[in-house]
Amino acid sequence: MKYLRKKDNQKRVKFYTFEKFKFLYLTIKKNKNLIKSIQWKIFCTNFVTPKLQIKMYNNRCVYTNRQKSILKIFKMSRLFFLKTIRFGI
Image 1: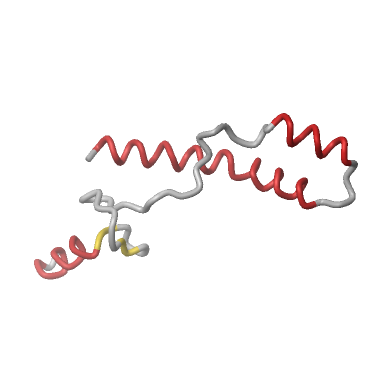
Image 2 (image 1 turned 30 degrees about the vertical axis):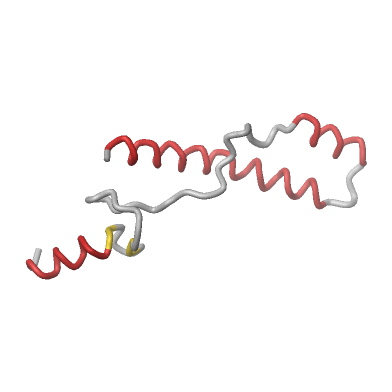
């Protein structure tokens, strides 16, 4: 369980660090006013991200580390939320 949480946190950090570079890369790619040689150099260098580009990450419950049916407001799974409500915690 701790391993999955640690791995998920590492993925999130990588995602946030490369998000700005990815945005810059896409704007340069779509910009028609730039010189073609500049665009070509940028595409060849591939400065955006390595092959470990992260497209998606999963939200997990803070308490149980469960991946499915997460309530975004409370950052916990639906099952854990119902248990805590039933016991009045």
